[in-house]
Length: 442
Ligand SMILES: *Cc1c(COP(=O)(O)O)cnc(C)c1O
Image 1: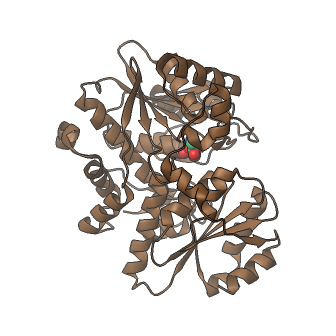
Image 2: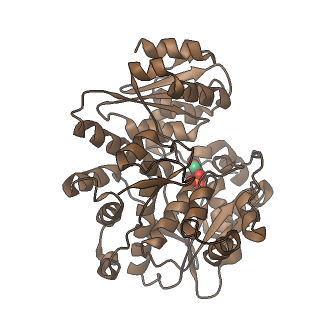
């Protein structure tokens, strides 16, 4: 399969190049040149298949030309060492729980898949040169990437994070791992971390010395595997006879997760329509209403993993529905709004939703999932059944959730284990020269 750039100014890339590079030369996002439909027989029998097997068939449609079938199956099964179950919350509203992975958020799926795919490519080359992943994080991405790559041979991960600016729970998820993960505590803010990573990728001497790779969320190897769990959600709902008029609602920030769901739809997954739930960062919501895409600086909210003012994957969504540029902006907008609706919720409403849902059903929503749940409560029509993504475990935001619901959320054992680990990190200034000298010595 070949990959083209959403900006159409870069050469076509192989899967390996798209994965190793992340971003195309023209700063566009890579898109697969084709989206293969899955056969009718697959959907006829999907309810009898297990999650990993379903995921393997989906993966084959994207990666089957580039990876041998038995290798791909191993890769998928090894990625999905945890379930993504669908749980009834009330009446016709169901939660697709994406928090059963190592760092309790959906990003585990993409990060684990990418780590194993990169390892596969290194092995293919004879495994001579170690790959080094550099990732800047303000919290959640670092933990998902670090844990996704933990113990994967041939790859070393450097996580750069701003000193004193990530929560203690987040920090322990990437500073206590050891093995092939190094945490670098930068005396600066998130933007300084990101600047160090960017400078490293551009530094010729450093790139001669070591092989550098990014594990950005826009990477096709992190973004496409997120389609896996939507197929599983459909299968589990179909098993219960509830899949005839299914609405999928995704709490969205950078729009990678919902974009993967839309790719699934293009592959034939029978979802009636989609809802993108925003927090107060309502750029996509406004686009749906007006047809104008108007990025803004992001605002801080309770659902902070969705605090994005210029969602990268918007370009992918436009590409998908403009038939690769053949349709006008108005026609594309029409195509998008006929399939996707939006919602936006301020912090006050998020708190209210969390309380209401807890009182009515006993289900504990995290602030991100709360946006999804509320959007279904507001937008479902009679006869429709809705599934929203619960994108993180409420214990990841324990202080907020305890405070809002006046409870003591139980911390899952795997999160507790991180909290008992020994913090190890390398202190670093925000000067690129210092970071470079450090890397040159590795
Ligand atoms: C990253 C994240 C989101 C947003 O997902 P996108 O793919 O960026 O739209 C939502 N909730 C949680 C908990 C996240 O970590």
